[in-house]
Length: 223
Image (cartoon, rainbow, N blue to C red; front, side, top):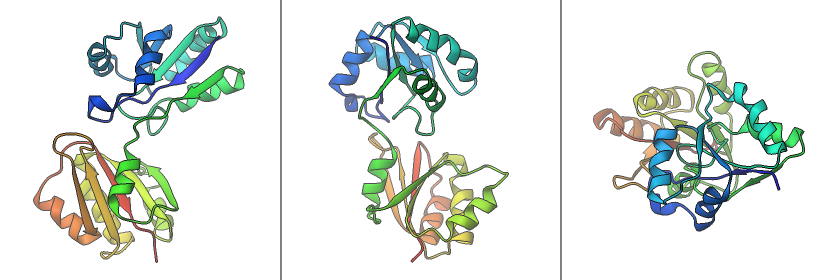
């Protein structure tokens, strides 16, 4: 029976791969990978020999029709991203939507997602929160920050290491220097670190210690 599986992969530590995820990747007809070189290491580690094909933000618009055709012919396909759960700030939404529109079964396996451990580690309220992902780089950035300055729920952002200082600086400007912030980097990896404090304190920390690795920022809501 045709089905699209969205399969989470480890965000760092390969041991976070689930037994079920391995089983699905071994049994499907095709694996769609964001970067076949990155995913190739994971598949080799778990002795998964299923054929793999590139599927990323630069080609997904062109390949969806062909993928839907294969699913409609009865194949099973798994979609994985470089790390974490597909469609969470990664490719996956467009293909999932196309499957839903064509009455093709979709199943997302539970698994690793970077923002969950970062939120729990932060010590900030997690009964209600919003996931913002990456802030706009230029157009709309200031407008979005002005809106979020009034947000009362805990906010979660993804950021690259070379833009972290700029983003923390924006938070001190728009949210205030005393707004509580938690920055988690290299989650599940050897050098995992979470830095907590006011926006000013966390900014000062990373100004003196340039960050490396994947980063999740958790910001307390306006009181």
